[in-house]
Length: 560
Figure: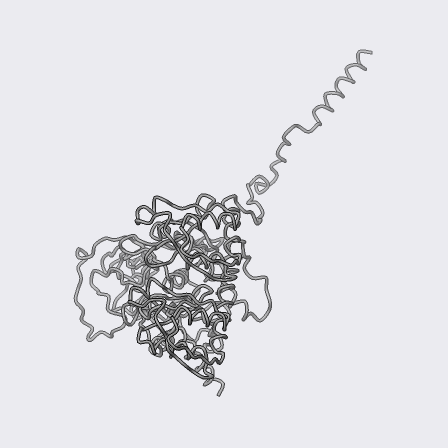
């Protein structure tokens, strides 16, 4: 009997021990890999911050009819909040700093235009200098300077643009020097005497940063620390860029990257899934496509034949008639016109018969003697002064894959130098005798610091002789590594102000001005992706037209 009871108790204990506990025990450690933490499977997750931004950006992409005529700014904010079902806030502090009252009257009228474009035209008057951003789960309207300084940091994968970082275990690597015996000629990331810009790479991180910054309409970090920053993050598992800038600059970075991807995929021999596009990028490209579609329609309308006859007709009535006739939304840049003494009611007398609207506008504006011009700007044709039009620069990406063969134009990341060994750009660590932190920033097309036994020469000029003036290291101020570079003995500062023959041809075949040639004006940069070649241009409307005509002429000659 006692043995039976003991057997029953023993069985019960064994059953209890075999029951699973509240937290399952780890499996036996048969293999170390079984207990290593593994990264979670990548899923498309949207943070609460991103979800709010998505909601707001989606609302801003919606089209509406707007008619604001001398409406107080605070009433506009209230109306938009109800229309879009989102919080719209006035940044009263920043408005007060600029002397702008919340009841300041503003005006803008257009039909079926996105809220985002409407805000651009409503707020971007030179006498107001207002802007908008997304902050604290709200659409915030404030001073443009405050908006531009409201920076945030975003990360963007760029594996499809930049080659993966080599495995350092494959070869011993000394970032501050060369071979252990010190007999090498080349510093870490440096280049030998005679190295030229042809040795640059389009799949290099610095070239990509240059492409994103040089033709941009936004300020990037300079010697005063003003503007945004793009920092490279090159891991063995992937390449990213960290962009610190305001919302509008972030959107432009997204649009340029996605546009390059779109053009590249259009030239792939076989269709592929391509780079996954998140919701923020999708909405940014959605808006870009709306703007580009409007621009294309307006360009087609400008080609249509028209006959006009105006006799002492007020300028604003002329534009209202043209808008109704051509279905192009016209608007007057009243502030810029008034700065030049031109009133909306100025009488216009003009007649033409069966010519394109584009030619008619040029003749109409030139006949007044008031130096008028127009700009295709955010879904609207804006009539302004020639002076104001020269300051309204837009970025366009031109696909030139049919004109330029793959690798026909070498990458030009670095300039020519006078002689000797020098550090590379940005992270230009030299070695041994000619060492030093020689590079300049990828953030600005400006010279870096030279020093020691050699001197940086102007990349646009050829040296008159091999003898160059020596700069002592003590003469070189130690500056930020990612701007002008910290020069050591013999270290050279990099300089991105180098062009190739195709960029030179574009600049020399158009009116300009160009920043590279004239010190001010637009910018042009050639870039090559895996499957395509593109030209990225920041310029005025007239110069974009000239670039397009230049490319058309090249294609006609190629066809012959």
